[in-house]
Length: 250
Image 1 (cartoon, rainbow, N blue to C red):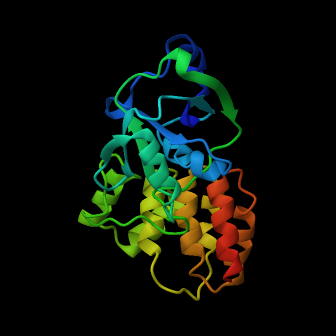
Image 2 (tube, one colour; image 1 turned 90 degrees about the vertical axis):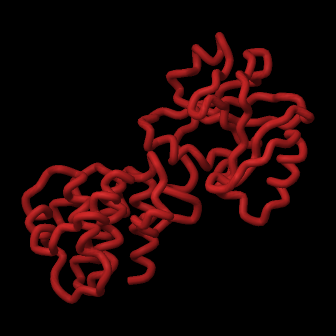
């Protein structure tokens, strides 16, 4: 039987040891095959981080190979099939990002092998292969409960002016307002100074900082490079990695 892994909060460890893994979101238990490449096995961890999980645990377990589970890409129709067939399809897939496995029953305590603490969340952010890309606000791309979906809809329906965005960036401490303002200024190469953006570097919202990096990458001014270098020192992996990526193109 293949070893499977379910990602959850370390706070659930005692309850899982006592009563197993109970179905949660969508009334199912999500999991992935346990692989040597932890980026693939743990790829949903960063997505779960958006739902408030700070300290992660990986729960290794086994179920019968012939048990029926659900398998498919996160944005496509899932199929019900035997676990061994699903794992075979997954292992032969050229691109393994964005696949989901889930089962509509509880995982019993006797099926659990061990619970491991994950030192930091791995995986893609927002959606597979979205690293370095800003989210789209069109109706087709917006997903219920997705990355700042409510704000994206507001921006699409009633966008602020450039002048309003500059004022917000200069004075506001509201991270959602700043995020909207930063996105409003994105889109064209800029020759001026990005100094007005310096105060945002001290904020901790990783989504705001990632969009700030996108904006800074559009500036030709030397200060933009200086700010990107500062952002490579962020304690958030998403922020530091994206800043490094943009610096390479400067």
